[in-house]
Image 1 (cartoon, one colour):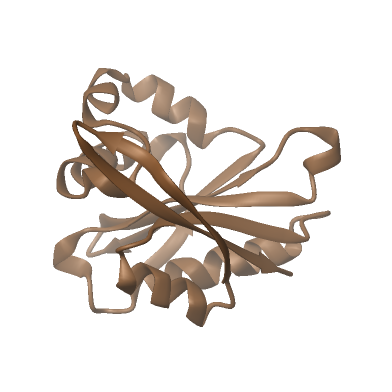
Image 2 (cartoon, rainbow, N blue to C red; image 1 turned 30 degrees about the vertical axis):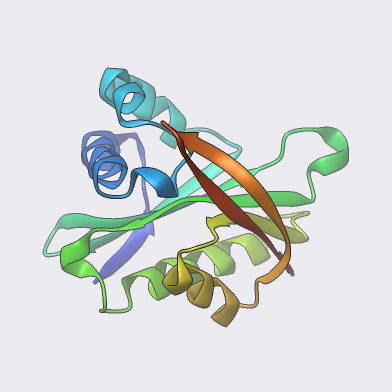
Length: 165
C-alpha cells in the first residue's frame, strides 16, 4: 500500500474514484453524482492543485483505492481551521487499514501545516464504522446537524466532530 499526495496527474483516477464513491454511498456526501459526471477532469486537476487543500490517495498495485482531503479555511480569522472531507475507500480495499493509513497521513500533514490548530469533519450519524475510525484518531463529537442533507424525501443527520491539534 502506497499513500501519497495526489497531484493534477492523478486527476482522472481521482475523478473515477469520486464517481464510484457517489454511486456507492450517495448519502455520505453533500455532492451528487450528476454534478460529478458533468465536471471535466480538468476541473478536478485544478482542485488537486489548490494551495488551500491537499488530497491523499491510497494505491494498491498501482490503482487508487482510497482518498481523503484536508481543506483549509481561507478567511483570515479562520485560517487556524481545516476540514476533513471526501473520505472514501473502495469496497474491495476495505478492512485492510486503508482508511487508517490515510487518516495517519492527513494528521501528520495537518500537524506540520503552519497555523492549523483544529480539524473539523461531518459524518452521517448512522455511519458507525466511520465514526469509530474518527474517534480512534481523537476526533470528538460536539453536535448533530439534524436533517443536514435531503435526497428525495429522505433526510440524513450528520455528527459534527472536531480534533484539536
